[in-house]
Length: 251
Image (tube, rainbow, N blue to C red; front, side):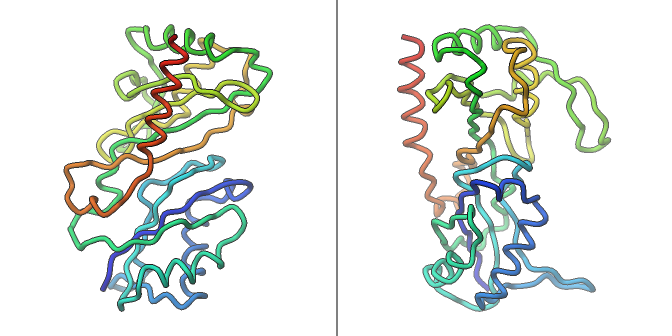
């Protein structure tokens, strides 16, 4: 049995495909292209595959990961060559690689995520002004939002500020964008929805949430996990660019 991952982007109308429907889509694509997926044991076996981190409905994404197992060896290059043409418009596969058989899944070692929120032109704000608003927002001693608790499923007030790693203004097409690096994963997870909700309410009340488009740029994995060294994330250039943009905004 081999353990692999597919890296893919999610753009366009496919953003409105739910997490479960996307799993079904990949399951059908594996079957249609003859990739021999491994299945779980038990009364109701299901294919052994999962996303590194579920993506909210309506979000686009540049680097998502599907981890899966095959019950017989097949070259990663062949899997990519078979699967890529079988994807619907908006799902673009860019890489397939083998992971070693370490016990931890990709989902277990996700620690953070970078998002961009594209503001509408009606926001009527410059990149410099947005940087100042971000500074005002982060200067608060607490940023309280109603967060759904994992165990109780109840909404409770939570200070989300410690889970915001960074926020900055970057250039956008029609207006500046809000870039956010947030905790993500099983240990600590912050939805960008809570950041947008509290930020817009305080700093840009004229902007409606439904006018803001969100994209997950990349996921961050625990660098101390040896078996993740085979995952070649290309977010380093994105971060370098972001630091340059941050310097320009502050200057």
